[in-house]
Amino acid sequence: MKPKSVPEKKPILKVVATNRRALHFYELIETYETGVELRGHEVKSLREGRVDMRDAYARVENGELIVFDLNITPYSSAAIKWKINPSRKRRLMMHKQEISRIAGKVMQRGFTLIPLELYFSHGWVKCKLALAKGKKTFNRKDRIKQRISDRDLSRALKYRR
Image (cartoon, rainbow, N blue to C red):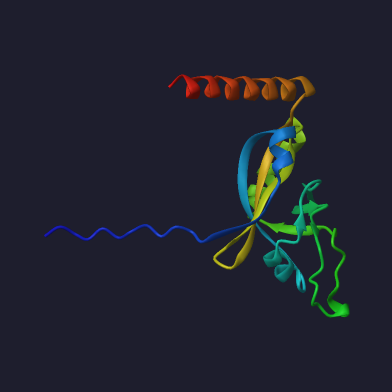
């Protein structure tokens, strides 16, 4: 008798915000998944998609991983007492060993920690964090030229068929 195969459960992910500028300005080396410590009605604001991560970056301070300039707009229906500074620093949750390993890489090699996206995973707010190195201007221009030439080539092949 053949055992029944159990279908794999896919994680329930709802992406709230992505940092598309990070892919343009940085070369991504490694990615990590972290939890985000939020207060008050910030979760409800995230569910509405009211977040701006354009200039966000992360740093290790006092053995903690902290994200800066992650702007979560206050929830529109929140009471006045719960209104929180939208661009306050927020703590990211990771194991201490991982934080110390990341801190070593950032200090030695000159990498930067950039949040790539915020999403809900099984009801918890998670942040995809990337260890990144800044691209030079000429690298970005070469990549744009390569993309344009690839697009032109695919158009030519499409019409040829």
